[in-house]
Image (cartoon, rainbow over all chains, first blue to last red; front, side):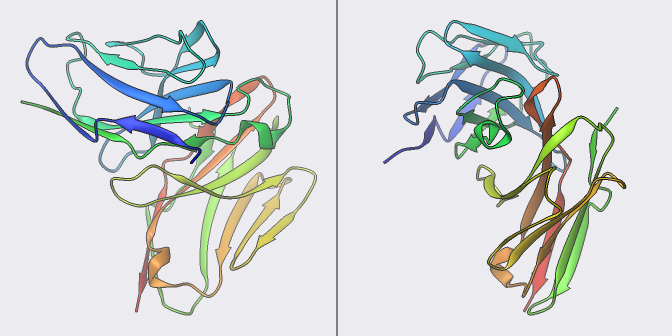
Length: 119
Length: 112
């Protein structure tokens, strides 16, 4: 069954702790993304990766880190530097993340999300 | 500076009637537009899209209209059903931008 899997569904972070959110896709997509959604807010881009071993900061990258060592995987670490980590985190992938390749190839497909709370 | 704007945070309609969700954009380089549907505590689901070379795209009960001169697009749902109650996000892509630019969403409530 092709898709995007995020785990865990719920995660709790203690003060000063780093936590890692998992995102795996078996769609053979080149590009992957991490978003954050706060109550009543839209989707804010944290980091994105257009290809393996490369990633770029989004609009709100401070306090987060990522890696893209494998095409299928794009884990997000919420570091202790992120002072307000409580949010719903969404991972997405698309066939391409490049501009000008044709709109349909940039359609993003989302995972079910991880809700992170602070203890 | 928001490039994609959904000015109505919420919309309530009666079951069986038409729902019209609106979206405005500022970047004339956008050439592909999408609508996503999102239920609480779930990821957004791709609903329908339209290329800038078209002015209408239809898929079942869902139709997207694009007015390039006004930089405006709308999603029509006819007839609306209670299961359509969700947050709808408008998104755009184009120019030098390889990522989707999302609006803040409109929460649709369809009353039985």
